[in-house]
Length: 575
Image (cartoon, rainbow, N blue to C red; front, side, top):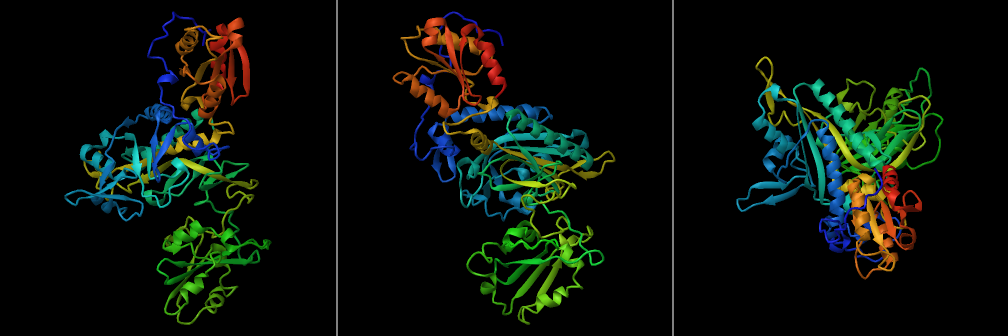
């Protein structure tokens, strides 16, 4: 950017961004409640949003500016992969969700109209987009197709918390891809993953891309995109040597491969729980390495995600740490028992007389079923994605390489990509005519970014004791011009500085609010998180210099106005 030009004075031009005509309700909660780095409290104090009801928020002008910039960033990268933008209704049909087997979700917000139609507010749009494409696309020649939207989604959240990070209403970008062949769909998946990486790279914040579980969405391949944060509800493991990164839901420790031929059995830990209907006692048995004798609670060493994948109706709120033991709730009379054991126990089953030992500990009238994890991928009943019931832990050897160790990070998920295959096209009969004239199921992908959640996560990543900070690409304003008052600055001069920066492509705002002191305005700029502050004060009157401040970079320097454009551009380029 060249030096700031000084155009003709046009101080009454209403097209300028002026805080005097911008609703900026800073405050709203006490400084005590919003002290320090509580980013949600800072978003409220700084006038970005207000809570309307539990888990429901109103976005105010500053928050909307950040949200729209996030959308613009997403739009840019969706266009790079040839995606077209649509806007689907938030209302969906229960009948469609019944056909895909997803209607019984507890977090669905249901609606009834005067005709008693079965409707719901969509938490996502796989069913509706599949039905739309089914009605419009008939031939493989019309594929590939990529459609996305940025829209409000709804979830009957049991316990809304942490502001926008876990809300009942949220803004999400959802992209849906449609391909003729699975090989083409997998190539599409790779291109979407790269687009997501590019979006996160533009924010210039550390991020993790982790192998993930597909959950209720479905499909057999998925990845999550995270910001590291103490507020995160996910645990992500990352190797310090190789590129292994995985959510704890799918992370497994390095396979011990213990066999009676070449090793001794290790100690066995047992964790117990009970089914939700209280009829089945579930025991998870896991073998530790032979040298591992460190004392610890079984609940800390057992992979509960693996256990729940084998026993989905498990009530994990009742275990040895809850004060009431599962055996006390179960009592054994006329009920059943399920024993889950990992692949290493399976290898030593006969040597340890495992089944005889385990069954001797319960009443004879409580039949026991044994379910072993094995390394045989053909054993579909053993959920072959898990071979161990041990949990991966911080500092454990990397499951993927010989020399690495994994670190456990708390993280906030901001995006998720899924390769769906025919998960939705099959039940909803989305087919196209293939080259031979026969119907062929379409291969799909769905890919989400939580826009409102990302806003909160970015705020949390950069907030400090003085207020919010933002990456340049989504900052509510890049520069604020703050005149110290008529004693130092003549009428029309702040506008000239503003106009020069704007002509150079800077998103600037003029703090021309009356009745507020310079110190108050500077504190407000810190709270809001404007990237760069330009002060016209004593140095301006004496030598046409401005004081340029950038809190994130630790910059505070007087700059002559002729060099202001280049100086500001260099700072913004680093944010």
